[in-house]
Image 1: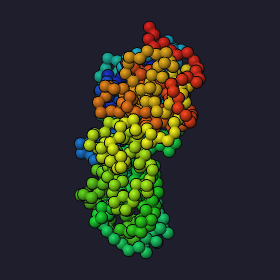
Image 2: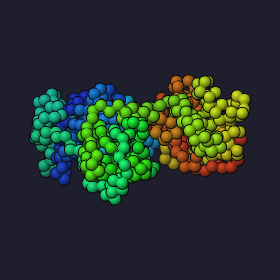
Image 3: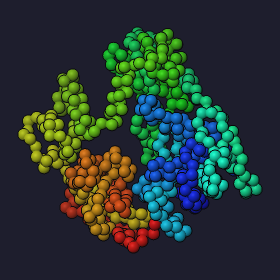
Image 4: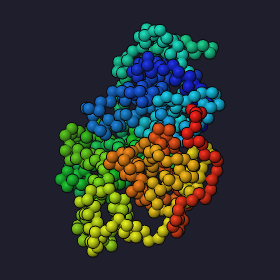
Length: 553
């Protein structure tokens, strides 16, 4: 929960519009209450995002410099992403309400109402985030993080006052990147700000970590295996985040891509949550994978210095030659395929899945009955959902049902589901206002949309969307009403069971893209038997007026 003190300082800082005076490279420093030095950057991103970022100590400052030097045109996509993800700061951003969670938005509104503040404008809502290296931005926690950001916002208000009627260079502002320079420093003495200057350290590249030992027993066993093949290797960070638990911070794992050139064989090495602090964990997984597959490299070609230092001692102990090679065509293709996998359209994924299953059957002489039911279920779900090109749809139908004529869409539910089910879904709109709706699993998302509006006594006539990954505007697993977004799945063509609804699943429903009524949904129970028409089984709280004269913002 965000403190009233932090909300108050955020709204006070917003009034200064300091982002119109300073740009992100014009930093100033402040001495925090406990003596640490923080570096403050003010950001405005094309008028869609205004923020104050606090980078603490040399580690934070170096993460800022590294991020600002990232060159998307001259870096690989993996390099660019990893550089951007090094950001280490606390941030107060001002964004549209659609960017906030329901809890964040309600908390901000409650503070504003109780303090007579009207939240209005394009980037009106304060949002407090912690950027931790290698992770997705996460909500600020209580305690020291909030105190540090409070000090930074207060210093921002003071700096705005000092800059009134002055150009930034008059106070000693300059661009902060490589070289040594002096920037303004704010510190408090007896509760009063004093303006001074501080010399910034020159940026020094962080050395690549070297594994602190490895699995010696595994090495001894590898010595018994005959060496074979030239291996191209590189350490990369996954393009998409993973989350260990619903409460955990999503992070971008590291993995060693190791491919044997002659066979185009990719070694299945498990990823690790982080690399910098304990590279030996990834090295041990590499050794385990080699032992599991009964392989030992004859020669290793490393993508870069990091991979070279990672594998150098391992190669020395096994007397395997290792070198740094800038041109690694086989590894380049593996990296390209990995990136393509994360950016494929649904049609491409279906085609690739079908080719993969067909290949498994042909190579292994397997029959349909021997295939994993999960693979067949995925194909059935996509086919039932519709939207595939006619040629691909026919190809999937012929594969799944070779002895049947062309199926009608009405046939698929009988094929896929042997018994009828219903869901009880909790739909909440703010604190203390929710409806539990019982609805058939075969109902479409558009049917759930209508049931929600009926339950909250809202009139239809506006656009709507469902975000099944529970992240508003994520674009990853979303469904829009017909005619809103081209080449996107529609709410009228997808049933609840096809959308992956199951017990415990949470997702968001957005109604009216102007007023942005955001409903939080959670599946409470899965019931046997169909529900003829949606019905409310529990109701709490009065629904807000859909068209108030003034909504308190």
